[in-house]
Length: 363
Image (tube, rainbow, N blue to C red; front, side, top):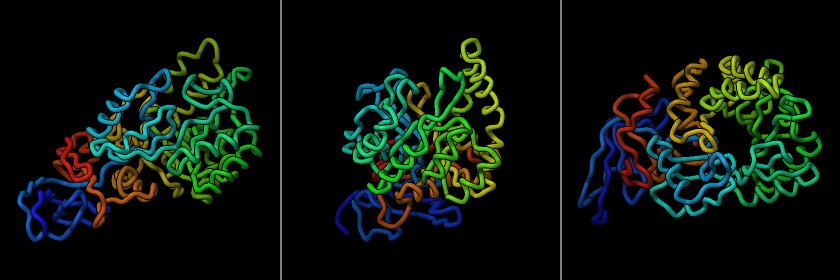
């Protein structure tokens, strides 16, 4: 072993939900479970170690009015890092954040390109706003720009109806999803309402964001197709406030949003009970603060998901779903250390003792 600095993580290393080791070593930024033969400098960190947390619905480079400058995007990423989020699936951003990949001190990002929405049917300056005839072309473009994901806006308020309505006809999404899959990309979609879900799932979509419209009759379809959901409950908590703002102009939409909010926990628990994969996502960016991953895990527990499975939804299971390693031998050393066992109380996630990214203690 060469003369080098080594980080020693000691205590309880949660390699998996049921696999615990007493220690690991970090050499050249990589995890080893074998003590190095020689090192000039060893730093020891003690506690309960988890793989770096995953926020599977986050927007770096997005602010309330659209794209933000690099300094603001960096602050967003740092806030997530401070919360222990070291892997982000960026579920749509109008900003080019590829520069983050060159920074060893910022979370790793899996990008879904820019949102693809129907014309005048989404938040201004967030998405490509197009018509169905152009959907395949834009999905092709974003599949090539992203990191294996594409993000559609599956529904939004239709001002003529005064309520949520699907954004795309069935044949358009079938063709677009097929093309994304041909290019090796998975597809996810923003969906609040019930009416867009069956067409999207039957068209082959891989994931649904928010999924507040998931009803008992749709749950078997999701389960049989293996379609995951990312509920973003910390964002769904804002529905009553949004609904209040629309009471005068769009009362039907406001009432619908309140119903979706009221049944949110039942929706998530019903999905979990049916075997639908559920993952942690905060919807940070836009108008929602970054660094809320611990709050989202706690919300999943409030919804009725067992604490260990809620923890897996931001750690072992989430990393496997996204194709990224956890605390395996030789993996990049991205981990978070806590004072006590997060399996016993997920609220521990809100207070990381140490954050280690690419083998370096960054918090």
